[in-house]
Length: 123
Length: 227
Ligand SMILES: Nc1nc2c(ncn2[C@@H]2O[C@H](COP(=O)(O)OP(=O)(O)OP(=O)(O)O)[C@@H](O)[C@H]2O)c(=O)[nH]1
Ligand SMILES: [Mg+2]
Ligand SMILES: [Zn+2]
Image (cartoon, each protein chain N blue to C red):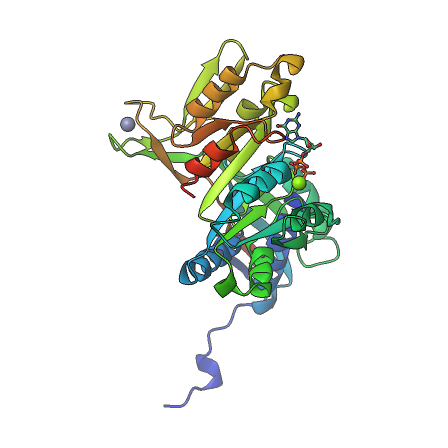
C-alpha cells in the first residue's frame, strides 16, 4: 500500500548513485523484497516505470527477487522458513511463530528487507 | 608525492558499471525508530503503539486505558490520521495532552513523524505515551516507531478471518486485543476461534477479549502491558 513512497525512495537512491558516477544511463536495478514486507512487487514495478520517466533510469530493467521469511527457534535452534498451518475450516494456510521442528517459539531473523542489491549503469 | 592526472582511475567512456549497493530502503526508518527508543529510555518514558483496522476501537481502547491510568501516569497521546484531528480532540477531553500527527496521504505513521511529535513534548513531564497509528492492518507493521510495546486490535465486526488474513502484523504484537465482543453473536463470529488464531500465529503475545465501549477487559489489557 505504500509502494509509491518506497519506490520513490528506491528511484531517488539509484539516481543519486548514478549521478555521483556521472552515469549516462542506468540499465538494470536488482531489488530484494522480503516476504514480511507489505510491498507488492507488481505495484513496485508499476510505480518504478512511472517514476523513472525522463531520468537516466528510463528504460532500465527492474529485477525483483522475493526473499522468504527466515526464523530461528529459541529452543532447538532451527533456522529456516515459517511453519505454515492449514486450517481446514478456513481453507487457508497461514504462517505462525511456532517451530516446525519442535513446536517451540521462533523469532523472526529475516524477511523484512527491501534491498537495492545491485545497479548496472553506463558511464 | 604528487598525483599526476594520468594516475587517476577513470571509467572508460561507455563502460558498464556494476555496483553492489546492498542498501536497505526500510533501514532508514528502523534507525530513527532506534533513536526514538533511546530518547524515550533516557527520559524513562514508556510508549505503546496501538495498531488496528479502521474503526476497530483504537481510540476507545486508549480512552479506557487513560481513565484507569490517569492517576498513576502522566499521559500523552499521539494520533496518526490522514488529515483530521477528530481523535486527538476526543482524547484531549480526558485532560491528557494529545498531539495529532497528520500523515498526509500516507497510510501509516513512521519513525520520523513520531520523532517530530516527541520534540513537541517536554519528556520530563510525561511517563507514558500511547501512539494511535492510522487505521490499517497492513502498512504500520512495516514501520517500527521505537515504542516499547505494540498492541494490535481487531474487532469482531471485521469478520472471522481478520487475523489469519493479516498474520504478519499480529506477529509483531505484544498484546492482541479482540474488541466488540458484545457484538459477537450478532456478527456470528466466534471469539474463541479468533483467540486461537491469534495464539497460533503469535504464541508470545497476550490475547485479551474486550468490549471497550463498556470498559470490559481494559484492565486486562493494562496488565498485559505490565503498566
Ligand atoms: N459495540 C461496540 N462498539 C465499540 C466498541 N469499541 C468501540 N466501539 C465503537 O466503534 C466505533 C469506532 O471506534 P473508535 O475507537 O473510534 O475506532 P478507531 O479504531 O479509533 O477508528 P479510526 O481511528 O477511525 O480507525 C465507535 O463508534 C465506537 O463507539 C466495543 O467494544 N463495542
Ligand atoms: Mg481512532
Ligand atoms: Zn525448535
